[in-house]
Every structure is written in structure tokens, then in C-alpha cells.
Amino acid sequence: MRVVLSCEVPVERFAVFAEMAWFESRPELGWLCRTARGDGDRISSDAVRAALPGVSEAGAANVIQWCTTLGLCDAGGALTCLGEDVAETDEAPVPEQGVYGFWLAQHPVLGRRLLEVQRLASRRDARFEDVEPLEVGPDCAVVFRSVLNPKQRFVVRDLPTNNGHTAVVRLAANASCRLRWTLDFETEQNAWQLDGSIDAQTITHDAEHEDLDLWSLAAAWGTGPLASMGRWDPHKRRLGVAFGGLGDDEQDRFIKTVELPRVEIPGKGGYDDVTLEDVPIGPATAIDAQRWAMARFDRRLLAAPRYRSRDAIRELFVALTQGTALAAHAPILPSHERCIGGDLYARQPEVFWNLAAPVDLAPCPPTREMLAEARFDASTGGEG
Image (cartoon, rainbow, N blue to C red; front, side, top):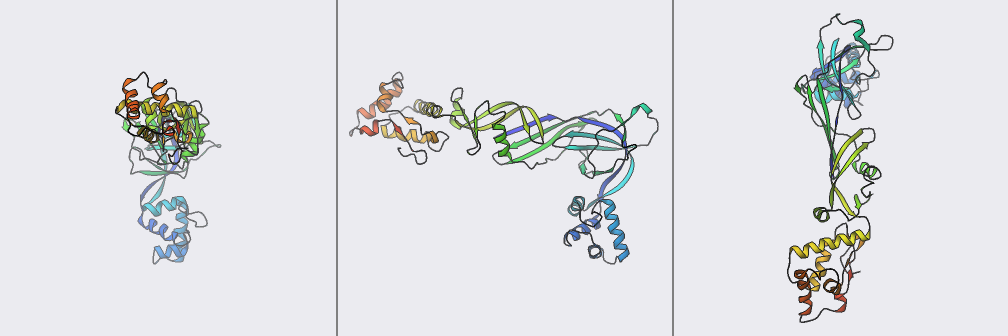
């Protein structure tokens, strides 16, 4: 089962005075943060002296203070998520202040993400009425990666306020952005990407993943948008459907593609016009299972016409039901008499003679039990 969710993500652009930090290569800080990992995940005086031999006690204290200022550790020296990032990449955030152009995208999956930041010259030519308070700004202390220059990473350290509000000047965004999120239930993997453009430049974004229990999500959809199409079994992980309306391929492959007007992912937004591919399906009732089994059986007899003994017929019926979603309902193979004399194949001469002749001309006539209708054990295929 697989689905690709897609939606437009609104992008706004504004100019704002901010304290930013761009990541630059700082291998000595990377080494320090890695050393801190081995010292209880703390940037301590011992960790500083181990990573930077020759540093005095006072110098170590200054280094710790600087790391705190950069956000690599908290006031007690404990390594932060940013410090963990520096340990992995050897890149540290270098602070600066100024006026910047922000392209901000908002979505439950993205959060409040900066797609791109542009340094702007400080000018005082904006009219007073153009300045307005920022209602929702980007997440602070979160590492963002430029979608126009993926090697460039930055973080918003602070957005100064006046009377509790951050003043901004709205600008034309000239941007389009779409989220595409692939959920593969069978492999229990998911990945999402952004595409679109900013100022006529193509967005480049490496796939990201969410911590998501896909089969729990399928169960939630089973009581929601899938409920009108069948009954979802969370244990067997398939949709119980009525036989009517199923195509031959759906009957043989036990999968179906369904169209859903809208699905919700808790905490991750809603998505419209969804195509859910390869949904595992099975019969909703024993009656559906019987019709389904016979439809497959009929097609096989017509597709491969040849003389078949009653024993071969029984083996074929088991092969077409055993190990499938039909088996749990143990569909019944009709009796030989009904097949040739009733309403099944009497009007299909090619099938009728292929079934009748091997029984009529058999050197050793089949037993009454062999000719009777048969229900086979769901687990072994043996007659039950």
C-alpha cells in the first residue's frame, strides 16, 4: 500500500531586523563538542583543556562562555542539540545582526521554516504605514538549510521586539512551494520533499522523514475515509470489500487502488484528492468469498481449456483459494453434478465437456465423496 500526499505550502516574504547566525567551518569547535560527548555530554573545563591543549583555566571559562553564547551548550555546560550538530558537522553558527529578507513557509510538517534568507541593506525609505507587526515568525534556535543553496545553513537567534511585537515590512514573495510526501506502508517508510521556485530559482530540497506509525495511521483511515469502501482489519491489514464491482485484476491480485477525497494525519495536516495505491483487499463476507472464488475458478477454466479429472479440479480450486484472503471463509467447490448439470457450465460447452468427459470415461470412476461439493481447511487446504 502506497500513497503520495501533496499540497501547496503558502510562502510569505518580509524584511526584518534580526540576529542571525550562519554556519561556517569551525573544526576546533567540532572537536570540542565531540570531546564533550565523552565527558558526560558537557562542555566542562576538563573537556576544553582536553580538546584545546595549553588553554588556561581562565581561557577554558571564556571558551565555555562563548559556547554558551553560540548555543552549543546551556548555562550549566550541557551539550545542546546545536552542539550535537556541531559535533557531527564541524560547522558552527557565527552570529551577526542586520536587516534580512525572509522567505517563510508554514505547514504542520514543516513548522515555521525559513526557506531562504537574503541580507538586505539598511534603508530608511520604507513608509511608516508599510511597517506592521509580525504575527507568526520563524522558529528560533532551529537550524534551517537554504533551498536555493543547500550548502548554506543558518539559524535565527533572536527577533528583537518593540512593545512585544517584531516590526516587519511585507514584500512580494515571488515564490511557489509544494509538499510531496510519500508513505509506503509495506516497507513502513516515509519521505517528504519540497519543490517549487523562489525568484525564478528552482527549490532544491533533500528528502526528510517523519516519525510516523503507518499501520496505526491505516487503522485510523479505516474508520474514516476508507469506511465507505469496506471494513478495515487492522490485524490482517487489509480492507474487507464486497465482491460486486471488483475487476478481474483486483480479484486475482487482491489489491485495489482507491480515491479518497481527503485524509488527515494527526498533527501533520490534511490532504485532498488522495490516490491510495495497492490497498490489500479481501472478501467482506463468506458470500463475497464464494463469489470471488468461483469467479477466479471460472476464469482459469476458460483461460486454459483442457480435460480435467475431478481430482485435478479439486487441486485447482485449492490452489486458487489456499493462501489467499479467501481462505479464511473456506469457499465451497460445487459438486460435479452441479457443475455439469446445473447452472454453472451447462451453457459453456467447452468447459462442460472438459469436466464431464474425464469423469464419464475414467477407468476407475471417482467415489461419491470425490464428486460431492467440498469445503477445504483454510490453513492446510485439506478437506474440512
